[in-house]
Amino acid sequence: MTVETRLDAERSLADDVLDGLTRPFKELAPKHFYDAHGAELFDQICEQPEYYPTRAERSILVAGSADIVARTGVGELVELGSGTAEKTRVLLAAMAAAGTLTRYVPVDVTEHMVQRTAGELVEEFPGLRVEGVVGDFEQHLDAVPAPEDGVPRIVALLGGTIGNFIPGSRRSFLRSIAELLRPGVDHLLLGTDLVKDPAIIEAAYNDAAGVTAAFNRNILVVLNRELDANFDVDAFEHYAFFDREREWIEMRLRATHRMDVRLEALKLDVSFAAREELRTEISAKFTRERLAHDMAAAGLELREVLTDDDGLFALSLSARPG
Ligand code: SAH
Ligand code: TRP
Image (cartoon, rainbow, N blue to C red):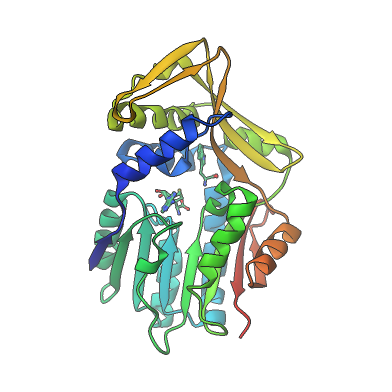
């Protein structure tokens, strides 16, 4: 097992925050949610009754993994934003059962998650090579090891993470993923949440137990700690709504009153007007057309779309025409 670190986490946070908090509409990059506590809160979100995406995606993997392995002959899995790789194990087990499993490459910004996941998986799958990358998947895909001759690869992006990109960046990101795929040999496995009754979507991002709210506010805790800032975390309310025109969820933090905040490490003062909102994340929802359109724009061919029984979520396989 190896883990290669590419990320300068401190610089990345400082640059992103300086950029985001000086914009006319303030925003923060969602990759900074996932410190140790944030990662824990995210795992708890996945277990909330309202948060259907994880259960739906898992059920698709349970029902479809053997078929995905048979169709693609996959021996190597590269997973972007791997987190705890909870659901990934279903696919790895199907690869092991088919006798094709050789290598797993988890890529994540959160160092301890890559370390932990890599360590657990070498134990769980004897003989599996795990080569982890701690890095930003928007910048460090060159750290992903080269594919091996005769070993078909799947690059997986699960959990609806692709929805966290705004549409333009989504396309360029998909294009950079496509470069990891050999035409006619490798596949992209993409998990996307589907457009549905807005009430169901909004509930998923406003769980009654308040875990999503705590997760959202945790980004301010990260800023206080890492950038020596003095956000009054409790003075920001979690706010998530479905934008019906753009068909995406927006997560925001709303200042309950007027505030001045100092980020000492950036020598930056920012002020918030009463009720001013800070955008922390979007989560785009997909239709089949949107999926096909994005893939085509990235030079990929959509080959198969699998959904759960309730039609909540989709897992799709795409490839570069070869
Ligand atoms: N794949 C898991 C986790 C999804 S949460 C699942 O489906 O449940 C999103 C994950 O992507 C987190 O682990 C987070 O640390 C990681 N992530 C977010 N932005 C990233 C970036 N720019 N580069 C690398 N990893 C990122
Ligand atoms: N990729 C997940 C999603 O879009 C991440 C997520 C779930 C999330 N709940 C959140 C991000 C709340 C920020 C705030 O569904």
